[in-house]
Image 1 (cartoon, rainbow, N blue to C red):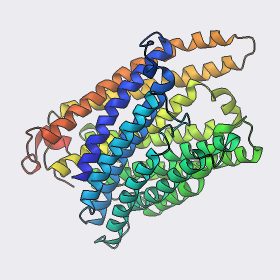
Image 2 (cartoon, rainbow, N blue to C red; image 1 turned 90 degrees about the vertical axis):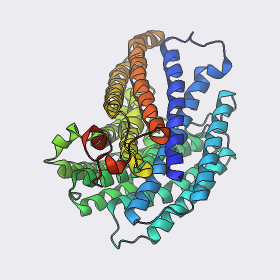
Image 3 (cartoon, rainbow, N blue to C red; image 1 turned 60 degrees about the vertical axis):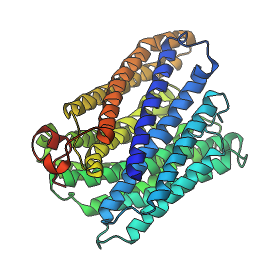
Length: 459
């Protein structure tokens, strides 16, 4: 139904975003590629990639996982099915329309909010339906206990709609301008990851680890500490991107303090996940969902620690305005969130469609192509970006020499993009076969590779 529609739509936009980013990556080191079409210039293709990835793939996968988890944890049927299907269709129209506007040169040029203003009302309306459906399931839950995952889901559906509407309302109609527009923009952009994608990703981890391992989460109290400290500190962190900018020093300092304080929720979550996994790491060999989930959970720790360190002025003055920052952003949205969404869909789809994955060996191809691809992407741009920053801070090095220095690292980015494309196409093939192909029913697939791919019938 509606959850499957969100999943299928997310995969479609993942493929669209992959094509766009490959073109953008090629242009970084070979600007003559596709240089004769205005709509394929880097200044349009890059924001089109960003928005199809965030609002197409990531948000639609996140909504699907959110709704599925809330229904499972509340043990109720998904309400508002017709409205959610219609909302998903409208969401697709909005992403397509906004992307066409960007490619036509009518984007807003406000990072993470490049879609023209009127599309924001469509997203807000659909998310309003998602919020109501989630809260209806929570209020009608058939279990008295509130699971850890539900705390995070509850936060995500309450935080993001107001965050999104406020940022759009302040920036686009001219509510704020100049310096304050930049402050609002970074407050929003940083919190898309921290208060929307992160809660959904962590909710999936807290659900999947106990299900796959057959053990309870290590500590409920640690998980609640992690949730409330995330809520308290993350929303302050965005202004650390404005270190050295023409903004009040106290505002930047607040952002730095909020970023450093994130060590508390990150350390808490990492400890809780590790203690839950202790003694069960051998399961990574036979559980595809667990591989994606653990890779994403470990990446959450790495990207959060890197983010807190990057907020420090001494680090920021080197890494800012370099490919180092680009690598860091992809470590969060891809290595953390996207890998967890892959794992969640691999777990949820067999239960949605009551059938097993075809060709489960392709799931390993997907995992290794994605894991190695994002590792190569992050490593190449992190090393190259840091060295780029050091050279940019040396007044004796001409800027064009710095640009030429980065070219080999940009080729590594394209190579990583090819690997990621292999993983995405493999994933899309599996999803299409799941939705329309003649596959074995789950009830009969209790043994062998097929059962392993869908984690059998243990949950």
